[in-house]
Image (cartoon, rainbow, N blue to C red; front, top):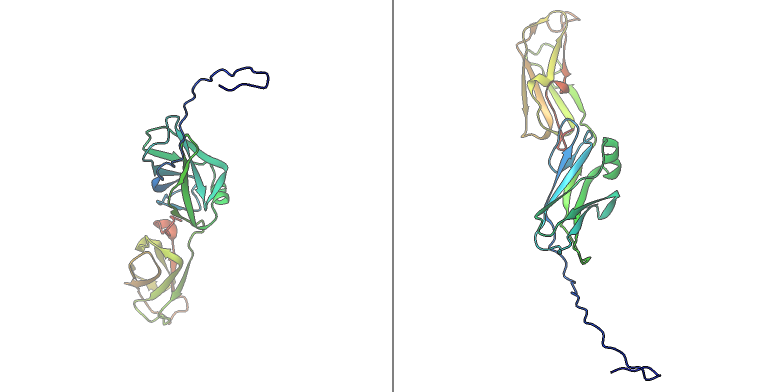
Length: 239
């Protein structure tokens, strides 16, 4: 029994039981990004028209009876404002969405390029575990195209053109092109397309079924017009 200098004996204290938890939770897995807004959404990618996104992750193991939290990080840093979601004990998944409503907000938060997103899970005791990275393509720039004639002589019955895009694209079809015909050129043209397996940057366009006195009449000309709005021509991010 402990006593003080005056001889007073200390009373026995009650018993306090507590749990020491230093074990981190299991790391979140199976991260996936789903874009929102704009005219196209590509998995794990952001394009110039997307206005927000959601990242989902799988949760395994225990986060404590009081539950925990999950936070979304970009390149290892927190968003401003922070993107945090509650995780109930026993939960098997979590979804995290910023409060963005405009493409400007998305592009300010995630710089163009290949970005790394992670989810940091914190259990009720304050232990943390961070997921492996999810690589996300942030591409806010639409592709551009240039057209050049491959056979310069107007006497060719089957003119051919080279169409080169600034980056690999998919979805190039005949309706993306039109032929303008000058005086002396007639016929219902047929447009053919050849390339390596898309997505790719280089396409060869051939035009057949044109008739006329090429080169004889100064107005006997034709030209190829690119119409990307006629059918979706998109890059890897959906621009």
